[in-house]
Length: 315
Ligand SMILES: NC(=O)c1ccc[n+]([C@@H]2O[C@H](COP(=O)([O-])OP(=O)(O)OC[C@H]3O[C@@H](n4cnc5c(N)ncnc54)[C@H](OP(=O)(O)O)[C@@H]3O)[C@@H](O)[C@H]2O)c1
Figure 1 (cartoon, rainbow, N blue to C red):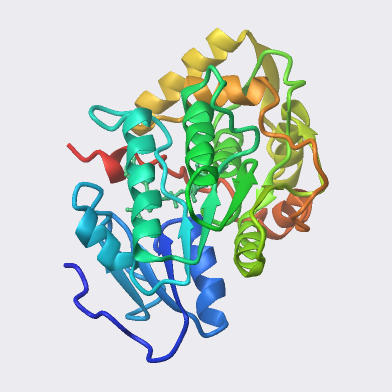
Figure 2: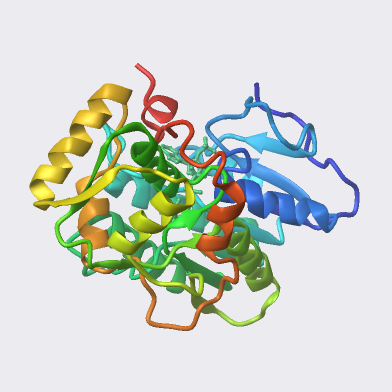
């Protein structure tokens, strides 16, 4: 059931965060609430066990009802946008996600939002041949061409308690005697901690100028190094082997069949292998994956984290 309340905390600065009960949006929300801001959220899941009790008022996305969407953003100082889809499914396509995001941008303009903080991805580009990265590039362009004051934050893979990729690599390493790396494993990634992404986003909201910044931690790993790091932290004895990308992808489809999920998409594998998850700029996050793994070695990968197939596309 959707909340009817309009103002929850008299006088507090209002922020709207998409996905406050999901992943990155949750950490942005946590940070905003901790400094006394009011948070509204746009979500498709208004009734989860909210970690914030009744502190966060939930509204639907209302992509097709612009006036309702504008009303839900009215009075917001900052709009933090995390909305995106991880992979297309049925009528939910990347083109549709771009169109939906443009509706959010337009509504933010109409509602008089003062700052638009958008979570993108490293190396987003409208020229990319990969639909995920291309869609992200098109959205960045739409934001830059809008009337909004903006901060575009471009994270690499995000790790943290609910992070899927690192957790599921650990799960595979715990569960199976062999772990298949796509090809050479020499392509790189620069994972960033979810709380650092939230800090970068909230700090960027306070800045005046328009900006585009990568959210990346100090360490760059080859994929092979990353898998070996995770294996060593969780004491996995799995043999790490290198397979042709097509063969490794086939195996990931088999695992997907087993767990009833999309474990990896072709876009994700190709983006990773094309070195799109590293930044050419300085590190902006401070938490090191190796330290986080050390602290979370007892829990990371103890269960499989679903990608959202059942959550967003229930049959
Ligand atoms: N996770 C990463 O490793 C990573 C890396 C680089 C960039 N990013 C970017 O960071 C942003 C946040 O990512 P996240 O992993 O933290 O996402 P998330 O919290 O799982 O989802 C963000 C928002 O998108 C909505 N959403 C997700 N999938 C959807 C679908 N299939 N249909 C409709 N709505 C959907 C969620 O709706 P609900 O509120 O209903 O859950 C939520 O409001 C995204 O823009 C993503 O592209 C993420």
